[in-house]
Length: 150
Image (spheres, rainbow, N blue to C red):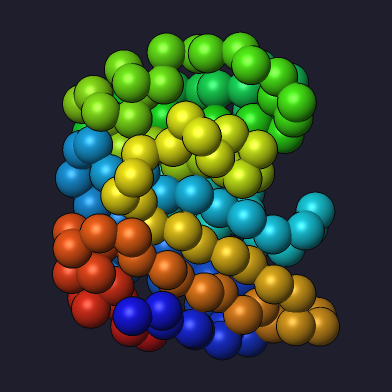
């Protein structure tokens, strides 16, 4: 059950991410794909806010991972710099621990991702419009997608 949602503003993107946050519990894993500027970090910031995180959330491009505390521990990974690398950052502890994890550019570590996850793709639609595709992999994520609407 792939779900496609068209949003026409940053506010609608944030509303979607905030709604999604209410449906998540550890150790949920979300992957984010999309071109530069597609809204991956905007989506993640709103998701984090929905998880009760009050610290400023920004892309961990140079640090690869940032961890935050809110209603649940939250891992934000940007694995762009790991392209072609065999580096293991302790994937099992990250993805099967007590945190919710969001991974930008997740296709670059495909072999290390959990078999069950929610894949999210953001595509430019001109201006602030985006097509956001949710692809649940596993029963838990299908149920999460059923609870998503704007």
